[in-house]
Image 1 (cartoon, rainbow, N blue to C red):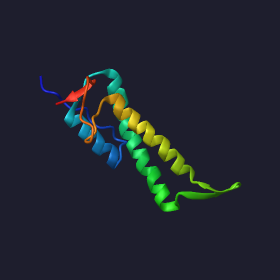
Image 2: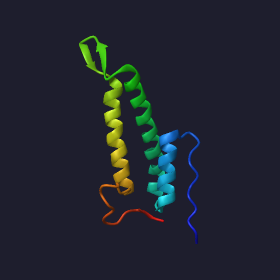
Image 3: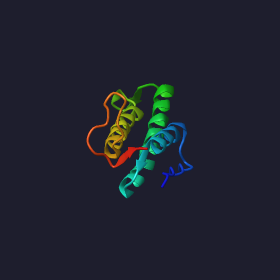
Image 4: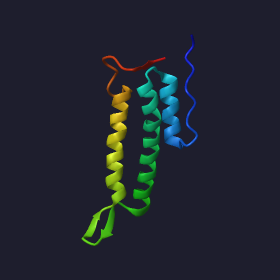
Length: 109
């Protein structure tokens, strides 16, 4: 039986859609948990792009009542990048610098 990739959610932006396509064409997502996490992975990638754009536009520092502080978008971007990395690991998506090892729920097509 041929594997049919799952259609992308309509709310994904460029990075999320590209990540969706890369994962769904390169891997078989064969657990329900992974099918639920995969859209969140892609939405998190989009959110990282949005936060990064805010930082580029407004800068990494912001005025506050305590003086100049790290912009809240920088802090949230850092948190979202951690979430993104954890979702990638949870899904078992190997990086280009670290080849796949062990057993993953998603597997190459």
